Length: 448
Image (tube, rainbow, N blue to C red; front, side, top):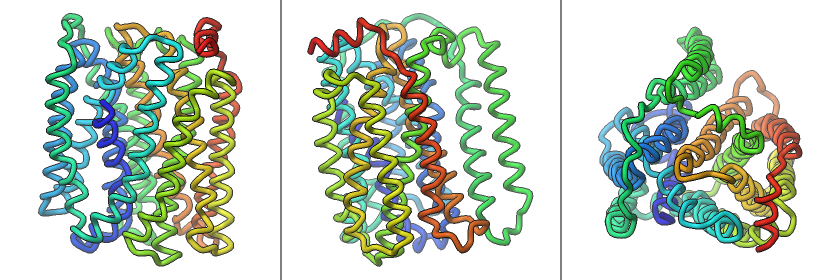
């Protein structure tokens, strides 16, 4: 399960450093290249809850095998893509494979370890692998792009996918399907279409003198319609994508909302780091990737340390600490770029991002899956992952779209991009302050 998580996490960020090489190969600019990044995360995030529900209904082992196989096939297609359109299509398919496989994988882990210290420790390992993969994606991208070419950032995943498939087939027990419960496919499609249209609208709005002035408002209007239709479908569905009982769990709802806002800032920080190191500092792919190594090391260290503090401080304090560290990092990035600092001067901000992710996301994951059972572990995991990915993808679209849009010409784009992220973190802090974990769960954590 950790190997699968690592592959998925790497694929979220592995393209960032390689984007200039991909653009040069296919002759496309920055606006089009944005789809290589957010197309994967939005499709994966939008379909994650469908994947979680399918795991609960038809069996986690079966969905794990299907999703992992799709992810591997799409990785191969991306590495061999002869055109930019096919590359984007392969990235969308990678996201769909992730959406099937990851909720089932997380549900296996949640059900394997009882609630309390053991589950806290297991989720910290899961988060450490994810965090390390996210940042090592930058390093892998730099090394592979420099020495082998950008296509290999996708192709290197294929043998590891084969390993995961063999491990799932051998080690994950078969599960009896829950029955022929209808699955809310329209809700999942609308949940995916809304963020995709919203991102398209933001990207089109950032074009300078575009030939399609109608594209941005049309896409944003389509996103609003998709959101309204999603709410209507969920109210009428016999088996809604998000069960009403899940929404009545106040700590879980607050944790998922805070996750989306925190992930928006964290994902934005990664992209701004990669842009700054190559655009302002003039580093090549390999040098930019290696500069991110301290962030990877600190992420893993923070994720290992957090379970002890989670038992001592409680989830809410850890979440607030993570939000505070991330806010300091975003302020550092914006002000550092405004002052024109060198690349290594951003390393303290990278350390703060590592602390923010390690403290904030681990604690939020714990709250989001507290009290789950065998019947709803998959959907609870899917909701949490969807909040993480959709929040990160739309956050990148908004923050980077605002920062680099012609409308803010004359303002440093890195500083302008940090402002909406800081606003989102302020809201996340208010939500986290109102999180209260049931006494039974808090006691189990403290007893560890």
